[in-house]
Image (tube, rainbow, N blue to C red; front, side, top):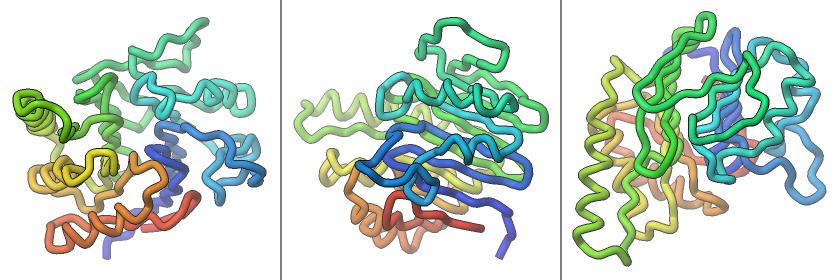
Length: 244
């Protein structure tokens, strides 16, 4: 098995902290507290101590929806000066600083040795392709096939066309880890976007997200795609860590 030297912490919903050899990447941090649980990474929470202890931190937010952008992330720069923010341009920030990098679809940037390209969404904001320490990561944000059963047929067909167009624009050579929605609110259509993503882009690992508190749906998706070219992870609890 390939040694990726990567550690993936599942935070909540679409939030992940990803440790590679030289970097910490944090995507779409949402919940900053869970009842009285201590604020530690094992509980899916980013503490001041965790941020302070890391070098080269890059924090991503795919769009302004509150389940993807929590303004608390902007306080972390007071704790660790070696931090950069890559934020979709629909997120409006006052007092823009030099470590804030706004990005819109199909634009790219390099932060030292990390390559970042934004792709589109089928909601608002962007999705992210990130090449870091020899690993290629894709975080979908709200890019998904949002095929709602209550929508009329023409809207469902339009949603499918728009989604497939966006997926077919992703022209990276390979994706090692793809973070992608499996939203239970879509009912029987929850798996359509993920299955198409796997069919077209064939990531090595598929990491389900945007499933709120329905962890069981990740088991269902893994069973559904067990014969696919991608290994789908099962998320058992908030704060779970995967190492590859």
